Length: 494
Image 1 (cartoon, rainbow, N blue to C red):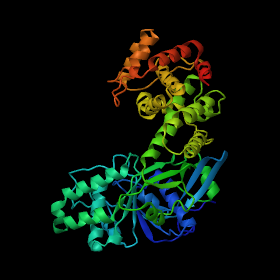
Image 2 (cartoon, one colour):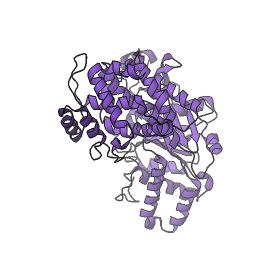
Image 3 (cartoon, rainbow, N blue to C red):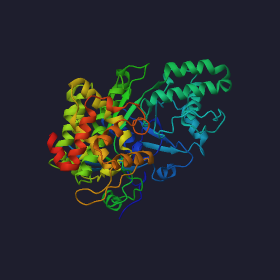
Image 4 (cartoon, helix red, strand yellow):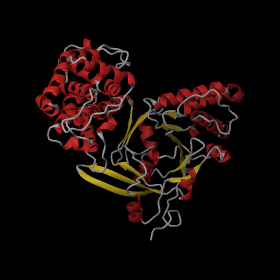
């Protein structure tokens, strides 16, 4: 017999409210709140989270209906072994809707123990909207709400240095903290007249005693496990309607703010001490490059190569005797050579990535990765291709073959197993590739794609025919794929 899930039916720990979290969605609950739950269990952090719904419609009623208790189901491989765990997370004390509970939301600023603000308001959340007013209850934009809250705190504690806050945005924007800080300053300027005599003092208090970190987050969170929910509820013994499923891998890189040392931030937020994969670093940039290069980069080229070899699932590509070797080559012999972090760190990360690709619980379709393949190649693989050529004096064959596979995919037709190839992309790209393939001339196809600065290589605006040897190698691979098939072409470079 399954029970309702609430604080009367399941034990719930009580700790001081130290974190305000803007966002109640799957990612934050399976990532940040899981991390805080671990910190409470393994260190003296002793903090709970107040969740604030960033927009007027959300899930706070559902959360409060379960007294903010829910289970996280982690799935994946750890050190080669499959893991499928269930843990009940109890770190959220309560959840607020600032649109219907604005007084309670603003009162959070007056709680002396509050020290952190964490957010995931989607990429669109960190924006400056000049139509927001200081008197709005609340401001519609997330940074506007923050300024309202920070000003209330400044007034409540008379600008006390120890009552500043540490802000750690988790939005998927490179240098998210830098963007957030910029928006906060924009609102302080916009509301200068409303702040009146407090304008200078408040701005100085924010600058000196509040700490805005840029962060990089990494965990795949599929979310609510619809197909497994009955079995999970049976297993835990509760009617939990907020179960969230995630991969076991997690990484949080937190760039130290300008006005705080790494040591102080580690002391205040002891995630590393809890044995978690949370890195507090001087700069987020090399880790951002590592993720884009060693996770997104291989994804982009393995997908068309695997697909044209008759393989549909990423995990099956990893386990294929030929395509698996190809992925390893691109990852360890080519892309890894283009980064500037310690080699043992890169090898560990690349091994973790391969374990993630090989997740036994996720059927990741290669076709889902192949949408917008050219822009993905431009941002994820082209920088590595150029750096490899610069450092080694030759082109990385695996990456170039991946580019030739993308070009071949856009030809359409059928695979070796008879399955129809149905590319889907921006119409201008589809039209260009159709015209080039219609010529029947592989040289023209290679030159036309590599030179399409207005349609394909929009960001770099570079004619890739100018990269020494690239046009010849792409043409050669296009011919090999056409004459010998993808698998034999891959074998020729291993």
